[in-house]
Image (cartoon, rainbow, N blue to C red):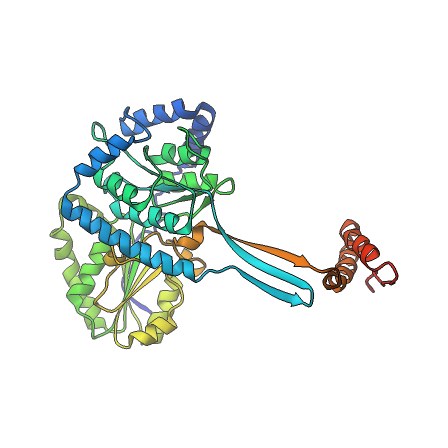
Length: 435
């Protein structure tokens, strides 16, 4: 049985996307040329903000005082979970050395980048969890300097809970600067900041485009598109929970795809019948996003069996993948293309988005077919080294000289020749490759 679509998307996540490239490139050029003053001008233009760009210790303390105690406890809980998981991730990466041949030793060393720039969205939604996810992982990785930046609101500044989260998670500086200007300030080292070696964190299409343009002169976590989620469900799944999970992710944005893949048509129809009422029950701003996402981008697919379901999921390579089906161990072993996997009804993407410990900065738009999400490893440079005795370099030098001459790279060959001549003056070598 081929995949049967009970609901097919009418748009793709690229449909109707504005060409923001020229706009973003001009802003970046203006700020690189104009420095702090240009960044302030764009902050006034886009954020309607003229306060301090770098928050003072007193401002951080004042903002933190506005955060209710219960929310502080929740932020601390989430931070602790993310930190523990990040520390466990880091422990999987170790320095190594191995004797390749007698006398020739090669090694690997993991070195954290010096400066990380963490972008924390603060427009329609104040992404407190993004501060936790990005700053905490940079801190655990060992970055020497961490800047967090978030869009300020007129007359208010950065959301107090974002300030508090960034502060307790280890940000060295917190900026009230959003959009392209925030990304530019971290990249170019404005306002007394060190130039960022890597930019991380989600953002709107302008932030994503800025990271795309700057990639190369600075590292980035990934180029993110609209968030997407896929649920794999069989007849054992609870249709109300499945529908609720789909709607919870559709509220991210009008172009956030959600997909249901199942081998049970009755379940699929039940879920589809429940979704409209669940969307209607949301607050207005969330309802508008979820309704548009479900209408234009959602898909419901019925497959013949679980193998076809898994193959379909791997083809989509979703950012978030939920399995609400029997035999979870089978699914965990079979599935291979996803940003983060949520196994069983007892967990949900919302947990990962906010507080369970795994990171919520994940690959979108099918990128999970070749990369994972943000982790301590993203901040680490995996470098190599080698050291040899003279005897250990002998065979390597011979092979290098012959390979280099076959390639036509005489200079490379001579770098090997001079060592053989110095270390083994009484020996002769055939250093010309047979062609």
